[in-house]
Image (cartoon, rainbow, N blue to C red; front, side, top):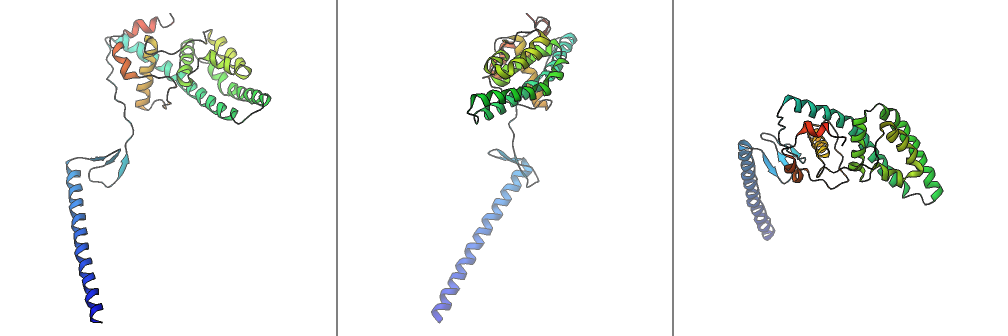
Length: 245
């Protein structure tokens, strides 16, 4: 009996000492965090601890672009005129990419060639109802931008899309895009080598960072920060004026 009491008391004493150490460590840790918060916000990996708060927020990737500088009012006016055209065209390219991805996913589940063709025609009809009237209201400049952005967002030119899905897409793209805008569906998107394409890319990235457009990853390998030094002396007025050449 005495032995039991002695052992029990020893265990309790050890537990008390242990708890005191744990509490001391916790107090020191809290003190450290408090000091860190007073000085600045604390960042742990991809989380940020806001000063004076206990809220942990996940950090989103941030893209920092150089501030736009214009040499003249005319250049500023040209740039923002073209900005509106890109803003109007991009949502259709984004939506087309989403529909194409949806179509491809659905086609992987259809083995019968006859049923695949039938499904593509069904998607074509759906897209015609979704796109046609809106596309007809676009300007020729917006149509040119759209064709380039289709290449950016899908990895295929409008011509390749027609070729790949000609049983369903042929009528749609030829009738509503080429006929409306009288443009080449083979146009590609090359911001690394084509000045007007770089301006489009610049407008897109600035629109994404400002929240004016919803970002959708390009299907083409584009590194804006790698190619932008090449275009630092770009004359926007000349490029936009000669965009059809």
